[in-house]
Amino acid sequence: MSTARIDRLQPALAARASAGIAALNDLFLPIEFPGFVVHVSDTLRTADEQAKAHAAGLSDLTLGWHNLGLAFDFEVLNEKGVYVTDGAHPVYAFCGSVWALLGCRYGIVLRSGQIDHDHVEWRPGNVTLAVYVAQHPLVA
Ligand SMILES: [Zn+2]
Image (cartoon, rainbow, N blue to C red):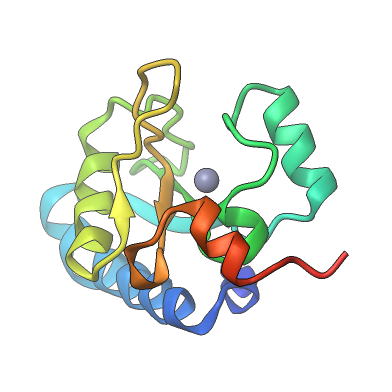
């Protein structure tokens, strides 16, 4: 479990990530998907980490919300403690819907046409990435 990385997110998203994890693991998953557990697997990325994610085909972007502390990814473990790798498993949309209730963006469609099933974003003011970066230049 790597929930400690939540504190690398910007505070508004960190609060929502934590609340979602608690609600899912303590309340919702035991009812809908007994034995399943969700945790945050990736939060803030360096430019190098984003470049690697892009090269591996895991991200469409060379600079994205992860680089700004405004996105996280999550992983679900099934009742046997095995990582559920199939993003089409309904548990992913279920978890994402909880974060959507908290005002986060979930269900981002990648250029491949696939849903980015493990990815949650927080867009302050609901702006685009280009607008946000223009307003908040990264320190090199
Ligand atoms: Zn992501």
